[in-house]
Length: 256
Image 1: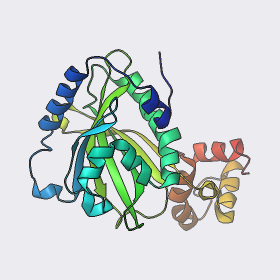
Image 2: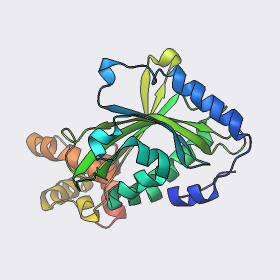
Image 3: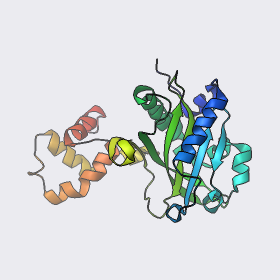
């Protein structure tokens, strides 16, 4: 049986038995990943472990204050609701109603056992710091799920400040599958969300290209430079994997 919840709904309903045993597993996994140990390569990376039933942080990096202006103590005291309160509202809306339900569905359909070590979930979001400046974070995490419902009990991962790298307001969710010994990575899924609906609209030039494609023109018959300049932007806006899906999206949404 699959459960469907937004993030808000999930936090209101989550309730599991054997909390002590589950917390032990979360701590063991946190230690196994080596996130207690100082590493020069991890400077600027904030590691965390979230307990969903109690809605608290089991672990949180001391450097959380460097990017948000809020000290670690306030997050430990107020729990995950503190982080929820400073996430940019449009970004939280996307995570709440779109990203989290996708993650829930994936966990219930693909996780055997309790830990999702084989799969990592990554997405970006913006946070308003104590000085009202927006910081863009990239979160990468794994989940420990209930052996019965496959719903997440703990989230273990890291957030990194990517403000100097990320442009635009789009939010990208990726699900990666790892091989043995975490040596091989395969992209399992990638979805792009746009907080502002107007960002989904194709420009006049992009519509012209899609119309040509819908009429049967090949990409070779359309200027290579034109295709090159607009292809990636159109694919991202529509979450299309190829030109066939792009045309189908445009027709389905009455763009052309």
